[in-house]
Structures are given as C-alpha cells and as structure tokens.
Length: 394
Image (tube, rainbow, N blue to C red; front, side, top):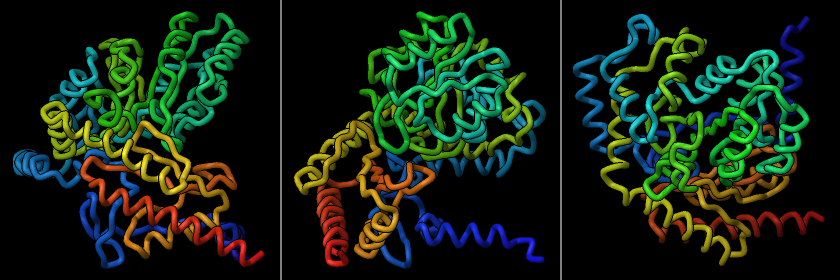
C-alpha cells in the first residue's frame, strides 16, 4: 500500500490545473532590484513598499542591537522574552498610531489568531468582509463566536446582517487595504455602524501602514478619522521592512490580550534585533515623509502608464491588480516578464477565485518613473502576446 498515493494524486492535479506552487529563491536582499536566477531583476512583487529591508541606517542600528542583545529572545514575552527593545518598539508603535498602548506578536497571522479568539466568545458575532485575509478567516474560526460574512465593502449588506442579529455583542473586522485588489475599506461607514450598534471595530492595516495617509499612518489618517477605530492591527513585515505583527488600542485592550491571547502567551518572542529594525523604520517614516509621498506618486504614475498601454487598472495603494483570468495564461505572462527582467509572479487560486488569476504588482518608493514605464509597456506586450497566441490556437 502506498500511504502517500492520495497526496501524490492531489499534487498531480494541482500541476494539471496550473495551480502548483514552487519556491522562488532570491539571491540578494529584498530591494527594488534583486538577484534572481543569477541575474538582476526589477522587483515588482515585494511588500517592502518603502524599500526598508536593505536600508543602511536600519541595518546599522540593528547591528548595534545585535552586538548588545544577541540573536534571540530566549523565551516567551511573559517569561524571559521581553527586552528593552520590545518595550521601545511598542511605545513607538503606540505613538505612531496615536494610541495609548501597543502589543507586538510574532506575525500578523499570529496577531489575528490571538486577538479574535481572545475577544470573541460563544454568543458573540464577528462580522467579516468576504475578501478579508486568511489570517482573519482563521482567527474567526478559532474563536467560538459565530462568523457572519458580509459582501465586500458593502455597508448596506453589513447593516442588514447586524440587524438580523440585533442585540448580540460582537466585532466588525476588515482589511484596511485589501491584499489582492488593493482597494481601501469604507472606514467611515464601518465605524459608524460599529458605534451605532455597540460593536467593536477592528481594522487590519498590514498593507495600509506606511502606504496611505499623508504621513503613512494608515486608514484613519487617510480618512481623517484619527482615534476612531477600537482596534488597529497590523504587521511589521511589509512597509516597515522587519518582522512581526502588532495591535494598537487602549491599555485595557493590550493588558487583556497579554493575559488571554494564546499566540502571544505561548510563543517565543521575536529577536531584539527584529524589534530594533522595526523601531528605526517607524522613526524614518516620521523623519522622512518624502518616502511615503514618493510611493504615492509612483502609484499614480504606474496606474497612468498602464492605462496608456491599454491595461484597465485603478488603485490608491501600492497593490495594483492586473487581471488576467485563466491560470495557465497568467503563468505564461508572468514567465515572459521574468525572462525580460521583471519579477512579478502570477496570483492564482486559492489566493483568488478560480478563473480570476492576476499579476499583483506591488510598488516601492524607490522605483523610478522610467523603470515603471518600462514595466508597464512590458506587461501590456506580454498580455497581448499571450492573447494572440490563444487566438492562433483557436
């Protein structure tokens, strides 16, 4: 008997459906230009939106902390795993987000997997946008609350479903910037409903921090609603260029999570070096607001040149979806672009729905207008080339 037969058959099926995934090994630091397949390529898929992963001042500061504190934390946050660096980062995060307190988790996934089960219990309702990130979906499942999914960014549907569960306590949660489509939550509508019906409001700002808002502080700044959301959760691994997740809110919230969030209590904490890198990155966003402005200028420019090349796109964020459709075609377009020196993988099911494969362009503040114009032309040509190839087959 072949005990692995079922899994082997499933893997073969993924290959036949063009859904099989393989690891891409990058041979340099994460930056606007990377080394891949032994050649220089323009990175158009990284979440390091401000190009902080390879920033010299961040590396220098992290090196100093490495020399003083070493490589690891040695334990969970509640035993031996909290250093001065952890506290300093949390204080910096709270100030940056305009909140009383902050708490760092090991990842954004761990943050959502800790916050939601801690705050929501049997008898509660979690109202979750249908396009929320997998970490939110899993966090909802891990809680004992009932999850009610509402149509994407549809406040009328959300209110209708809240009324169907009138009187039940709970929480509304949404991505701030949605990780595939790059659109922004209707924060005014969501917060108004939460306040009207006595529900907690929670926003995942993973792709918003450092990207939207005049100074890169995220959704509340974008909508001029500072301090209005009950719970701000986010990550340190995207625009911040480090690692980890976090939550910002009242001291009551963070003290409760210290005592109830299992992913916080039972995980060895992140390295002091990682904490230091994130702290210095946040300081640089405050010290050099041009970085956020440059990123926002690049977003507008790239959308414009894509449109001029016949690609229908529109985005206010660093995530720019270029819709292809069929998984095989998306893979072929991506490979053509890779061969030309543009690193932009295809996004396929289950990350997006079947038949809705896309290229997910992700911009950096350090991309030049010339690089983005060249990329736009190459993307349009590659899509056109594959479309013509399909017509010839027919």
